[in-house]
Amino acid sequence: MSRSRLPVLFVLAASLVVLASGQPRPVVVPVTKDTATSLYTIPLYDGANLVVDISGPLLWSTCQRDHLSAKFACKSDTCKLANAYPVPGCPTAGCGGDPRKDMTCTTYPYNPITGSCAAGNLVHTRFVANTTDGKNPVNQVSVRAMSACGTTKKLLASLPRGASGVAGMAGSGLALPAQVASSQKVAKKFLLCLPAGGANGDGVAIFGGGPLYLEYTGSVEYTSSLEHTPLVTRKDSPAYYAGVKYIALDNSRVPLPPLALATGGVVLSTTAPYTVLRADVYRRFLAAFREATAAQWQYAKKPREVKAVAPFGVCYDARTLANTRMGFMVPSVTLALGGGKNWTMTGVNSMVAVKPGNTVCLAFVEMKEVKAGDGKAPAVIVGGFQMENFVLQFDLERKRFGFLRLPYYAQCGHFNFTRSS
Image (tube, rainbow, N blue to C red):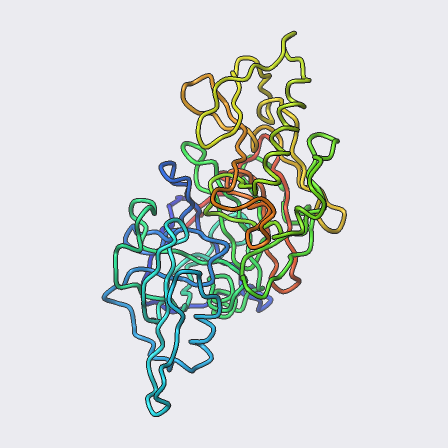
């Protein structure tokens, strides 16, 4: 039996692979972390990648020769869907004042890192991915999709080298999860397992939601053990919000201002490298973390603070912190979620090593250019670092978010992207 790597290529192909029961298999793609930008990408064609943005409402890329133009009228339902979530600072799509003209739909692809946008058109496209049984890729399958086509390469600024656009994965009709569900007749949910990058290997995204098995962990199926909390919807945003009642360090609640977390809410993001907290939340969280860490005695001495390295607010001499299988021994950070579930992050997801080599910092940062308590901004943006090596499932049908921390001996990079042939 030979084993071969299965690339994900952007081609005009057509097939639909189903289970013996007649139910289509989920679709799997690898997720790579770009260490230079801390962004995550999925491959599409000729080595080009799209940045994973779970808050993005559109799939978009720079225009390609093989894109097939989709000439939707600007008053069509599809055009309205493409422009349902205008971005502040970007033009608002309009049809003009002449009702006799059936103007072609214009969309505005948006770069979530720089905040820039540009006019673009809708195009028909297909990409070939692989179906999966949760353990390995099984068969190639063609996925039809509607994409926004940007005409300027300035949209690619600050994205990883080789990236040609953004894969929006929010809860909107033209985001990638909804389009894969429609094209492949799979469940309207998707799973993300974000990798830590480097030698840890590629993570995995499964459209259709699972199952998920990882190498070196036997017959364990991870989606069956997910904790679930309701997703909170907002009319003005397609992003995924979670209801958070309080934040705790170990078993002690952080004393936040009343309604601080309810004001603006808590949103999940794969384009924020680290969790970002609004000033009224961050400053009290930071003070409580420093106090709780200082109270710990490790190796018969207290953890020693060192000069903070931007953008972080507090850093420590790593030699004064015990290092365990779950990361540095610091107070665990818990988000108390709706439904009585707790999302707990230990040192492996809360402390990040920075230069010089013996310095580690608390990987939570303060939101800039936003006033404390400003309800127009989220109270907390949970960033990619905090979500790495968790199994995350976004169920758009049941409007719930599932999560599970992988055991220390398993990683998102342990999905087997080869198959026997």
